[in-house]
Image (cartoon, rainbow, N blue to C red; front, side, top):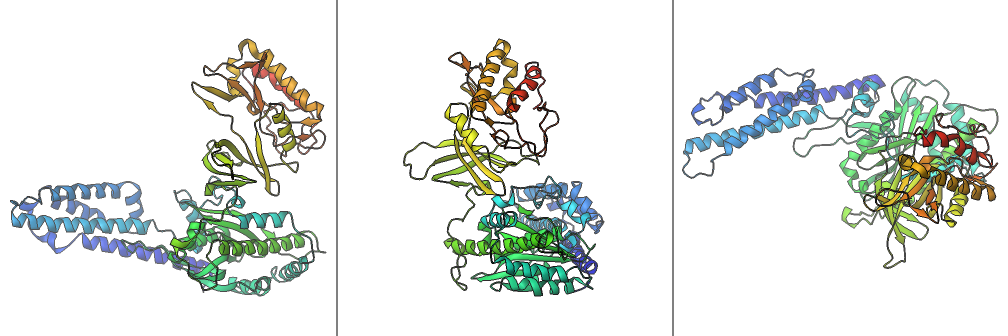
Length: 622
């Protein structure tokens, strides 16, 4: 195993060699013996002329220009020409009166068209083959591939993001909970001891990645003796069924596996880098993508092939979670943790300790998962794809489609919004019904995932306003881990011609003379909250729904507009809940509204007074 830069060059060289081979094959096919025959009399559509032109184009290509030939549309145009020629050549072949020599000539030309088309397709496949993981670690390489439709959703660049990885498998949720909310019991001693050993050894200068890897594994490997370690584990490349075009395969430094009927079931991938030799994170993302493309793992992809990824960059360790859906999803579960000695058992040493324990708990959950779905009922039991049971799912993973909480069962339907806000967790429409509710009508709900800042979602405030008809029904506010809450509530729908609920912010142009009754109703809502010593903390037009009829006019009940308050992310008891760390500077917040400052009992009223005047003039900040 040579130096990283040498190995990377070798991997790239293999890709270039494969591409050059395909190019040579294509050129050779364009000059068969048949083209030297004078058969213009049998040519119905200037076939010879087109092939000679194509031959000149292909023969001028080399490794440097083939990419441009593909990207600038030259390849697409030539493939189209081949299709047109093929159609012309086939026209009339079924005619029993066609001259035998003409039919034979056309059949030869059709075969030729088929061969050329196959070679051109093979050429584009090889040109588009992803490089090996070690080469993918180069930012000049991954930045190109991460702009394509099959980009790895790993937050590099930031737009390439999927759902939060803890939502996509219970093993990652388990890891996150144990890392950020660690158990402090007698078992901590084993992990603390391992952390201390790592922090004594890993800060040293190592002559190679291999030396660092061996030092790490000697210590880390003792934590879980039930898994098998494989060094320089080879990941088979994808192979096209029609052209034997190969992606670049590669080796991963270390993998941790358990046995199952199909072979080695990978729980952990590990990638080691000495300082300044490439991006360990992007390299291991590509390694995982290759693992999912390995034909031996086909039966695992039904379940997303969840895997923990470890990036060891010099004396720093980061743990990531990875899942394969339509695209590969990867997300760091920890920051890069320094494996440096401390001056006691707290600080960075304890953080590393919690990481190691969380990883053990997470891999145990992963092992349990594979057992539950039937993959590892017995260490050597073979389970066919057809006999696999339904997936074992996170109860609230929209990507799986299924929604489970308390005694409710349902399905996710669609994502709400455009999904381009990188700072917000997604919201979804779903339908639910009671698990034992035979014949009961389904209810349409909104499922939103929120990170709260005061410990819990404002469940009490939400339920209180719901009880007096001023908030949608709340079905669940289930904490998943470290403040991440799944909120399921009634969907306040609107339909053209029928009416329903709209945001007050979008209704402001229709207030006309009714602005006074709307403000009075908002004052009543605030008074209800103050009587209970509660605050909403974010009572703005976008968080207030108003009911309208089929014509879009405001509906009135007992001389009052019908309003409903939503988004209780910051709500709670006055003086106890706090503002979040980031506040929209365009919003006229109360004077005391600062990051992590307590929300005052009168803050809802002050906020209303601050935005109301601009709102009725159509200038409210959202």
